Image (cartoon, rainbow, N blue to C red):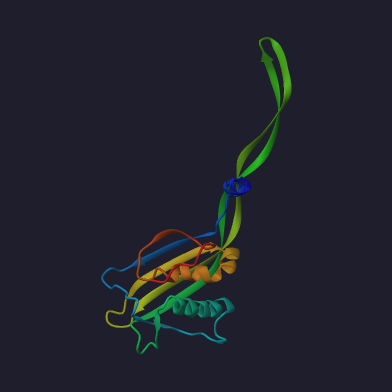
Length: 197
């Protein structure tokens, strides 16, 4: 009986304590005329300790290389590669409107069946509130290194900067795991890692 009580308690608390997950907006586009195979060789400029780029770009380069390795892609110098990967990481402030619940108090006057009523009513109302949110956006593209030298895949992922920093590996992996695909929607950052292709 004790085991049943513990089980019911666990189920009840799990149902009452809803989980808020962290999501990012993801959008990719693939040119169907030029499919990308997982065995294709990709050239990525390793910025290493370059002094010609800012810190965010240099760190993004390192994370891109780590995640491409983790996903099983073959990296090669540009002379031997099939595709060149280009990327841009940027931050921008975006005005976002949220519904904020505000408690309300109002006096109630009137009558019921000729008897006067006077009291206070408590409640909540939702009011819109707009604030600037700092967003991080990562854009990645793949260009063919053989004729025609065209961009055949590009993708973008965006989330609040604090979330992009907290879930950095998941943020990059969520985009790179969709190389060669066309997708659009939200992707969960705080869940299990996206499986490799």
